[in-house]
Image 1 (spheres, one colour):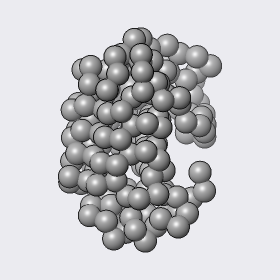
Image 2 (image 1 turned 90 degrees about the horizontal axis):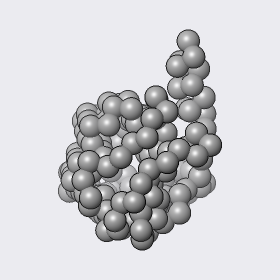
Image 3 (image 1 turned 180 degrees about the vertical axis):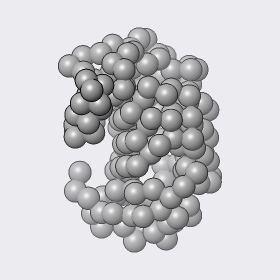
Length: 171
């Protein structure tokens, strides 16, 4: 019962955006999550948990997330990628079976294919005004994607984004 209440509380939590040298996350077990590979445009230093929020810390601006860098993490439930990030490689978050929310920053310009394949993603927020270029579908199924107000039509017309349900939101 405790675990179910913790997961429900996480779903209601809005934690903002991390600084450019951190990736923030929430997990269903409260454990530290570390990257699978070192491919972030900055060197990974460590991970900590502070006030219930997991924080991966880097020695500089996180500009990319490499192939399968955070993939296969079944305990990840939410992930918040920092401003300054411009590229996410194919399958970067693939196989995160309990991941239900991801927040992409306004600086994101391109992504590989199947970034979220094998995840249970239900909510994607992409804060970029111009839809990032996608090399293929984001995930196995269509998803709800929240984008900045005034950007909805551009996302609906963009390759692969339009395969999803697009909602406009003030961030």
